Image (cartoon, rainbow, N blue to C red; front, side):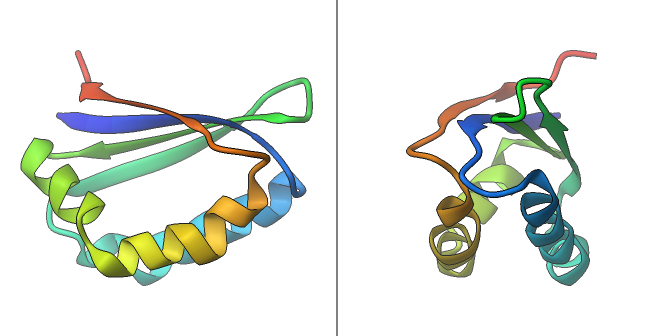
Length: 95
């Protein structure tokens, strides 16, 4: 299993971030080959957010990462909800 973790700071209420993420998963999640799940953690400090996404393998992750529609979604819908550039950690999920 492969995936990505994003660690960022909120510029909008967590409810808005959750709604945007849920809408993406409902609209696109089931159509992405190899996509397994995503989760959002809202930090107790009210500002930190951690988003985790899991894929069947690295190829499935890279296909989404290189999708122009995904880039548009991130740039126009999700990134504006964050305060600055988040940290990204990509790698293998160890079970």
